[in-house]
Image (tube, rainbow, N blue to C red; front, side, top):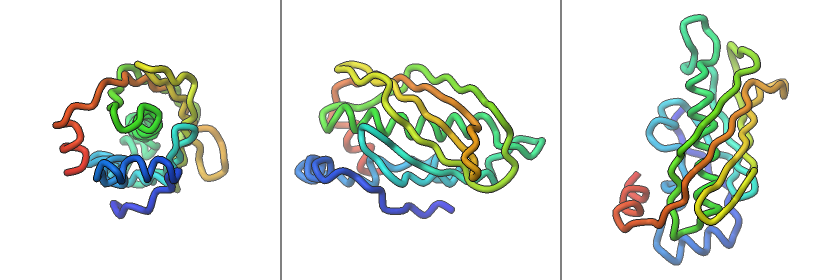
Length: 161
């Protein structure tokens, strides 16, 4: 479940980070929490980030997908998009997350797609739509990230994982 798949990045992004000696898969992974929850990032660019998460292991006591699990998937995808928008000199820090849960899911895989609503110099806002395997909307989320200048210790932490 925690196995990381190869993320599809635009070539210019790969080149930009490679020039800095940065490990893109480590920097733009789901992180420790996302790994424990089985989040897999499949596609990543500033225009669109796609990821999946299993329902199994991420449920609340009634056996439904936990709303907090949907929030983790949404914040992960929106943060990756924000980081890619900000570029190698910025770090994205979530400052507002809103999730509306539309329907329950008991099994299978959910897929989240993050697309930009606003991409500015100091903030980025992404809409994240999470759907079940039948394509039915499970959750609508919106994440706003502050884009702040990257400090040397930020990069070291990201590359270490």
